[in-house]
Length: 116
Image (tube, rainbow, N blue to C red; front, side, top):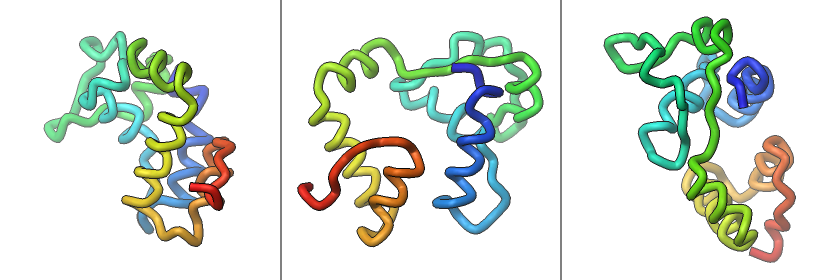
């Protein structure tokens, strides 16, 4: 997916559930590729700052694309329970249980948190 296609939705998610500071949707899009589950095929062409970040404007204007690595995508689509487990770990590590369903709804995942 191209950054410019998900920038607005990602910004909204960060505003709704992220830290209380100006949102930077370029940060997760760009920095996830260092985790090896996210790939940005054109990453070698993207200029970065001293901190290693990419410019939101550059990502948008050059339609830089990113997405799960094929291995991660295949694992997550082949095993719905793995996706649920990963989502719940992220939720448990980062959010109070009282807003787990709100976060899931915000990102469009249909997981029943009452059964986990």
